[in-house]
Structure formats: C-alpha cells, structure tokens
Image 1 (tube, rainbow, N blue to C red):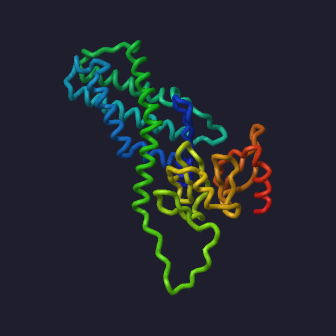
Image 2: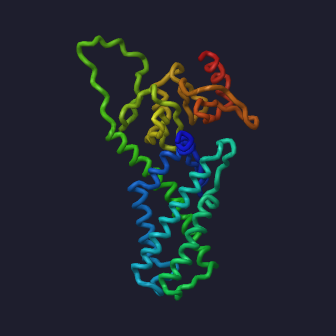
Length: 294
C-alpha cells in the first residue's frame, strides 16, 4: 500500500502544443481530471462532437445511439489517458522523460478509435463503415486541439476549484487565549499568508515552485496547493532559517533539503522525498554554504 501511495504522488511532466510545461503531482492530478470542472469540459466536448457529427453517425443510427457512442468513447479515452500517466509516473524519476502531447495522447486515441469502429458497427447494424484515412487523421487533430485547451485552461481551473474547496473545509486557526502571555512577534511569522488564501503553516511547507501566474505550495499533507500569486509574495515572508531559493522558480524548506548532487554535469538540490531541484550557477555557492550550516 505504501509503495502504491509513493507511486501516485510522484510527479509527471507534459509539454503542451505551445511548449509550456505542466508539472503537477499525480495524486492531485487524478482528482482534478475527474472533477466537476473537468466533467463539464468533457460534456461540452461530447455535445459539440454529437451535434457536428464529424463521423456521420446520425446518418446510420438513432441520435441517442450516436450520443452514447461519443460519450462512452470520450470516457474511455480519459480513462486510458489517466492509466497511461499512472504507469508512466511509476517509473523512477531519473528514467522519466518529457512526453510530447502527441505521443502522450496517441495510445488513448488508438483505443478510442478501435472502440468507435467496433461499437459503431454494432449500433448501426453494420451499415456504418468508416475508413481510417483521412477521417481519423482529422479526428486526431481535433483531439490534439481539445487536449491542448484542456491542459492550458481546463486542468488549471480544476486545480483552483479543488484548492478552493479544500480551503473552505479546513478549520480556521484557533484564536489566541487572552490570559496566556504572548511572546514578541518574530520578524517572520510561523504561517504564510497569501492573498485570498487560508494561512499555511510554514513548518508544513516542503517546497514551492513558481508556474507562470501561480505558485505550487507542496506540504507534508501530500497534495499541492495551487495559488494565484508570485513567488516573491512567498519569499517576502521567509528567511534563510526557513529555507533557500536554489533557483528563481523554486524555494526549498530547511526540513526538506538533503544534499547537493550532480547529474549530467548539472547541479541539483536533492530532497528527502527523492525530488531533485535545479540549482542555478549564480546560487550554487549560497546553497552549498547554507547546507554546510544545517
């Protein structure tokens, strides 16, 4: 069971059609893929394909059969896609490579295509027959377009919605008791307060990564918090006693850092979790000195 849990929280990396990278934890990605926001995205996709009827199903079968075929085919594709990512994420991080979006979604497309050809023939009593070329080439382009849109807009929105629901479910921080002496407030607080977010205990934070207009705050609880903020907003509330910034897009807690390692001529800050954070050349000396003082 512990091995399965470790497998599910290992990160995976995808590159969308625009060349931007998304690095999230699989434990957080699976709930996001099957969230209400993602479900609405897939429902809209199903209705658009059913109405536009690019495979001419409505000429050979009742409308409800065509709707079922599109809905079940998309569901099968999503399940296959998720299974592929889960298997891929189970490999050691050192052996994992970035997967172009074309190759990441191609196996799921092949499975869905075979399903459509088989079930479409049954629902149409053998009347519907479709050649793979060129119709499925166009279907592949349609999948790539919607896949890029989902990774660019739908999945990040799902992360935000899940984070908002978790924040609403978290109990508020207890109020200080008046008759207990309150020590002088330190220069930096024991919690991190970001705009619109519930305060996060600094001791729970393992590392932070900047992603365009968002930051991913990874905590000891396992699931990252996706927050619309700058990493500078976070760095303003910590100092070297709490952690270090080995790269402009990363911050690492003093509790999570382990040692400096070298791979393929590049330096990384290894964490106790096994994750390796890139270290920029300009900050290498500061990171080494910081580790020596731990």
